[in-house]
Amino acid sequence: MSDSAFSFDRIAHSYDRLNHLLSLDIDRWWRYKAVKQLTACHRLLDVAIGTGDLAIEICRQQKAREVVGIDLSEEMMAIGRQKVAERQIDSILFQKASAQDMPFEDNSFDAATCSYGVRNFTDFDKGLSEMHRVIKENGEVLILEFSYPSNRLIRCLYDIYFRYVLPWVGRYVSGDKTAYRYLNQSVEHFIWGEQMAQRLRKAGFREVEYMPMTFGITTIYKGKK
Image (cartoon, one colour):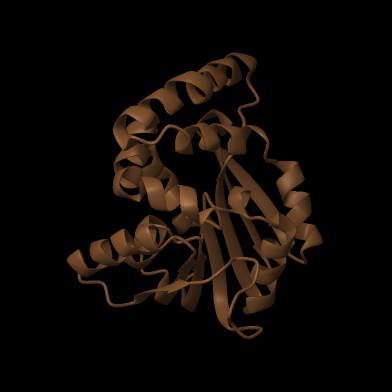
């Protein structure tokens, strides 16, 4: 799902099942709500496409005629290709590439999306800069990422779940001792809300806005080039 390809290759076989289980299936609604924010376009880039759930939802809602997805995890994309084939979707293309060094010309896409991947970029600002570079003038960027609840009680429960419950369930289902511990740590040490919006503006995006969902557990960020 990101530039941390090795970890994601190891858990690719259980990734989708764990996402739905650990989020109590709310992750489907998050993606649905995020894609609803997009303006329909011709060609869209999905960064850190992973197993393709966001790209599939984009096509389901007819928000793009063609989706090009990039990722460094071959195992994740292999599962994504299988899911796309089973649904007989021929408008999603998978390509191995880094978010920090995209193999596309300037102004190649009408929009760019990234679902739960930007916090894993080796160079976060470079990744945002590349997304800005490859989309056209007035093109949209949409990012869906974990964040922290503002309510103290919800935040306390969230921390307990992320630090103790999630890694244990993730280890039990995936058989990997470290991958879901890494997920917890990556969320705890990442930015969200206005800090994220400021970094998007720094990368050149305008009209940046963000929408927290489910007590602030996750947030939709949107902007324009």
